[in-house]
Image (cartoon, rainbow, N blue to C red; front, side, top):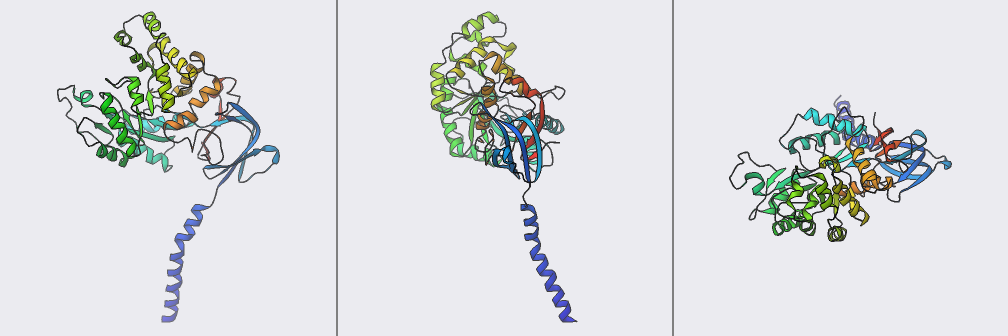
Length: 414
């Protein structure tokens, strides 16, 4: 009897030991998806590869080949010669306010964005506690939404206190006050440990201190994002300091010394006249030299001032990388997201071709979050993030409004 009990115990013990391996094998079992008869939009070359098949294993693209080869694996979706683009990236979204807002609203925003083809976002300033939670829930598949890359918000003492010790609330890992004498490495480590992809440098930094901050951020492997105007650091100083993404084309009025450009009651004709003569050649040269991206945010430019469109047009012609970011609160009742408005401004007002606009919302926007090797174009090895369109967006950017299917990380968004 003892022998039988001992034998049974041994069998059970060995079975328990084997369980992790069994579960691991189950977890590693590959899931394949084949998308056949699809026209692939190459956002980097601005051309079309027609009649193709895309093979996906788990969340990655493993092969791309002509559909006439008739090779498939796993579930097969015949897209019947529709058009496929990389998942869209909005390079300037706010999931919540910096002070905090109901988290359920954030979940609604994220669900809306994903269902409209936005598979990744950059949030440069929001409540860090909310950002961390919604990012975790999206990553674990608990909630639907785009992949989230967020910043630790950083500004100088004058921004918070106006030299009067106004602020009474404590600072946070995701909202910091930086001033000369602060241990910058410590500030960056705190931000990094909180899960920030980058830092958003906002206001009240002069050129000299800004350079120190940028060096510290990069030393701690954080991306460096910031306003084009830092008050007092001006756009050229911001770019020369090493900031990698500068936000708001409207702030480029600071390339000249004309305070009237910031006054709301100044006639539009005056602003457009002055703005049309702003020389951006030196700024463009420095931006190209440092591979700096302009996050233009035309969607929030006041009453769509013509001079702002003109300045973006000039920078685009000079070869500056421009990403598509909106900086607008998501409106759940809208039939399509603000990002499509942004792309329309690029094409209708800034001289972009539809291909240029698509690049701004895919491969260039992916670069703003340091993910251009993983997303932003349709290539073997990249994440299987796609939007399927019924007609060719290279002919008309408005075709993005007529979406047929969204796929994120190899899974069809239901």
